[in-house]
Image (tube, rainbow, N blue to C red; front, side, top):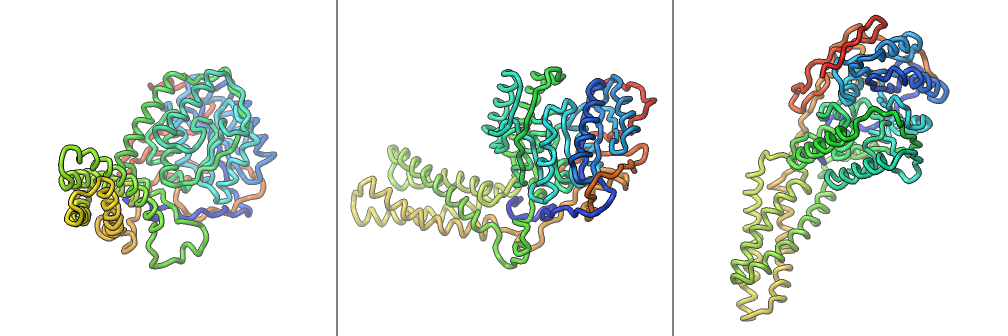
Amino acid sequence: MRTHSSPGTLPAREHLPATDAGTPVLDVVIPVYNEEKDLRPCVRRLHEHLTRTFPYAFRITIADNASTDTTPLVAARLAAEIPEVAGVRLEQKGRGRALRTVWSASDAPILAYMDVDLSTDLNALLPLVAPLISGHSDLAIGSRLARTSRVVRGPKREFISRAYNLILRGSLQARFSDAQCGFKAIRRDVARVLLPLVEDTGWFFDTEMLVLAERAGLRIHEVPVDWVDDPDSTVRIVKTATDDLKGVWRVGRALAGGSLPLDRLARPFGDDPRDRELTNVPQGLARQLVGFCVVGGLSTLFYLLLYSVFRHFSGSQPANALALLVSAVANTAANRRLTFGVRGRGGAVRHQAQGLVVFGIGLALTSGSLAALDAAGGSPAHSTELAVLIAANLAATVLRFLLFRAWVFPDRGESGAAPTVTAAPAVSSPAHSTTTAPHAPLPRRPVPYQPSCPTTAQVRAGAAADGSWRDATVQLQPVRPHDTDAGDPR
């Protein structure tokens, strides 16, 4: 798949309209498990803050992860008392499962979540969602590791957080600074396509979502936050860290194997209308040239190193042939993945075979140069041989790029329409449709929210890339005062 040029399914980002309507602009999800003590003050404080500072309509959704205490009753009372509060109960634990389920069913164009302890200062909420409303960014995260953030927490959690982010940078090449802060937001049109690719249903959900979004080229906005650690947190640090490391390994293998269809997350190059009016212009040529030059430079160094090693055990011609053969295989594999964005194992053998044909042309050029040098000078110095080989390789490199682009890795998206990828519907309820129909105009001030969903909705959370479903259908029911404790199904 060609991730750099495929149009994917995401349109260009646009600023949400700001006129009157009743649909909430922002849906803040609070995932909870046995939080009967903290839930009421958290929701009250968040509701007061949004009413006072947020200029659009909003909703607060309590996502109960199979609590076994009175958390469902507290959520039901809050939903009955406050029009902008809704409650959803899931019969399986997992913060990632709760977020994916509620976000998939939400009709708000901006989706966010925060932890029930409200460790993050709420003054960062409007800066968090503003870039998503304006169309500037696709996701937004609060960062405790930004230079201007102010954080109060113990040395143990500080060490774990920084070590974890170093692992992400070293293993998954993540560039965002804080994957674990419970303060994030995403545009609904992005969530509709991104969430089916995220497998984790627990605490690693955030990290996996951010890594896939970043690898797909989506824009992630970071907001420095003021954050105070909750000493009564029920998070099991050792188990969470173990699960996170397993998730890092799983995602790293998937990215290395190219099995993730990240091209479905591609956006147009820019939001300027002029970018959309360009016709008959090859896409990605500049980026391909840069990538090819980088790969070619590294391949040349690798080739020269191999030639120098093989030269000690054989003549110049065998050493050149062996060095060029090994470096050609590595060069084709690197250009296939990095320069031309072809992922997955499909067509790999054919590409290597075509690459060997290109290798043969390069071998003819370099071998011919060495033969001409031997015929002219008798016993040329090793430095002279290297100089001639460099000149011959430069000529072969230009020809190799042209053959790679036109024959080995042709951009079929330029000559025909790219295949359309349709995301699976997230919910069967019309009130919670996740289609990309134009959003209704948005209000300037909060209006009471009247839940329009039916008593029971069937939400299928966890669509796989092949259209199948990883999780069983989740039964969602608004919490009611007479609900009984369901117990932990695990």
